[in-house]
Length: 392
Ligand SMILES: O=C(O)c1ccccc1NCC(=O)[C@H](O)[C@H](O)COP(=O)(O)O
Image (cartoon, rainbow, N blue to C red):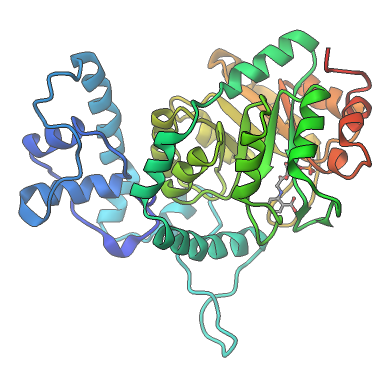
């Protein structure tokens, strides 16, 4: 269930799974991560039952579908990270090799001393998230979440909404953020009614909405996401969460998300690949967020990426520079266009000139929080941001 590299202590050997055990896994309905794949390989040799819902001989699986499935799964099983992990490398060493500085599975320092001190706010958030997700999973195991998904409405097409808006207005499509507070800015809005804000954003031309669900640092909640979804708002919804575990993706889907955020500065490539696969299975769009060239180059190499966010805010020190979008897109714009990837400019956008600047740099969508939510009328603020009414 959890991401491959999240729990290195549970390492298992998958070097040479037999053909038949591979077939058993590949033809199953996988709802777990590569490490669980490897567990299953061992399980199939008698340790415990396989967690596959389809039998190896399921005739309903088309040969084309299973060939694609086999290819994708082989790619995950044979990933370099998996081999490194097997040979004893720690999750943090593997991530560091990809330029990821956020360390995982660290024991925070107790008041009495010992343990580790987070290096920055993002690392602090991730360590807290690891504890929070473990508790969430204990309270609501995946089976229950899957039950909720069974009752959920179909997802809406996040990317189509962005493209339609861009074609209609000729301006970057707006993903308007419903956020009460943030670590860098504190409380952004005292009088905070997520449904009312979401509605006014929609009426004033937002293509999609981003709903903060993190409670501790952003005063958001999954309840807000659920409420907005159930209030009849039609804009597709991004679950703005610090995702480190597949469970959160399932939960986001159950609570009404149409898209989820994956942060490349936190997740190694193999996690992103596996999470993308899970998103596809659940009908969700993944917005993959990058902050620097190295992260962007990593993400551009991953197959199936459709939406990339360039965050102008450095999440480690809070410095916001909208020129970051231009710097990163630079000579990569052609590759991005060839791959039909939509780029979202994120953070620090306040004026029509800011929007024009990132548009000229190559983005087709913008993600905006503070400059809208702080205004008395966040809907009217959209007109101020674009310099015109974008609702028609
Ligand atoms: O905004 C923060 O303080 C922050 C701190 C740590 C991790 C993430 C953080 N923000 C997330 C975002 O980047 C923004 O919510 C989003 O891009 C909108 O930015 P803005 O328009 O500047 O509110």
